[in-house]
Amino acid sequence: MTSFDSVLARLEPRDLGYESACGVWTGAIGQRTGYGNVKFNGRVWLVHRLVFETIGGPLPAGYVPDHLCHSFADYPCAGGPTCPHRACARFDHLEAVTQRVNINRGPRGNASKTTCPWGHLLVESNLVPSRLPHRICLSCHRAHARGVTARSSGRSFDFQAVADEIYVSLGFELAA
Picture 1 (cartoon, one colour):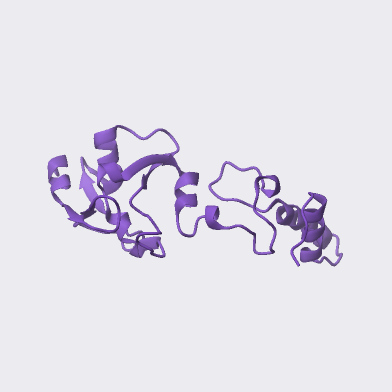
Picture 2 (cartoon, one colour):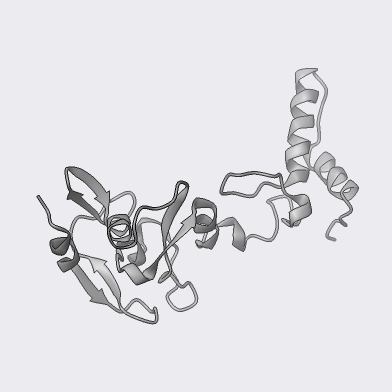
């Protein structure tokens, strides 16, 4: 059985551009995720989650440990499995946040997007209310629903025109 002290011993200090050196896991790394894995007390854990829960206590329901050390300004990376910060398990580099906050802080998170693929602003008054960790353009969402109805009754449908019409009806102006 692995002891928690032996888990901590496998964290290697490494400067990845944060205010203090990361504690990078030197053991097994998931190929698809890039996160460190360890078997502890009969269960396979993500190392950063194990460290967070062992030192900081159980995460509240719906919360995940987020890597504060992943600063895109100081250490730009594309995120994903090749991100070196995913292997960091230093407790003071982790923060308990909702999955929505975690995703939106990431490089591909919706927080960095200002418009939908059709050019509509992603602002509060043009978002579908959702508890999910993503933002959906309200104009396009409503246009999609109208398109399903139109196509099921055999009528033609111009998605962009309908989405733009809804966007304008919500009080927005179309970009030139």
